[in-house]
Length: 129
Image 1 (cartoon, one colour):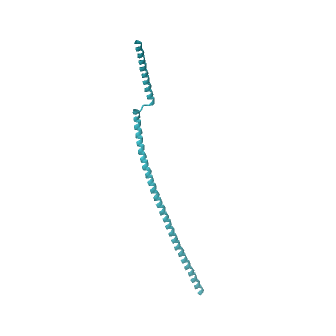
Image 2: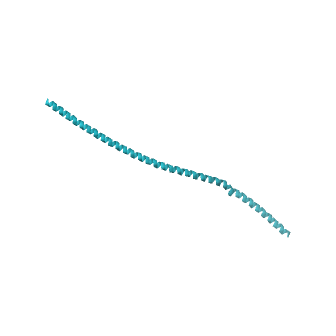
Image 3: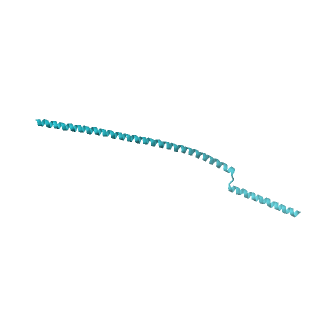
């Protein structure tokens, strides 16, 4: 019977050691899992901060582009208005080349006609004297 009690004592000792080892493995596993979760949380926080920084950067960039676009639109409207004013003013201030040629040839023909009359008048005066 002594052997049987020694066997049970030995078995209980082995079971106690296995239980302690199992508890130690579970405690280490919990610790490792907690560390892993902290690292993952830290990575997510870093990624979230980087995403927020990028969002802020792009929001600033887009607002700059939008304000430049508005300024360009305003300037384009001014240029368009100036162009329309110039188009309205051009016929008043300038003569087209074709019109100038027509007027110039009329003037030249009238001057030629006056010259011919003066020449004829001069010839008739010379004959009468």
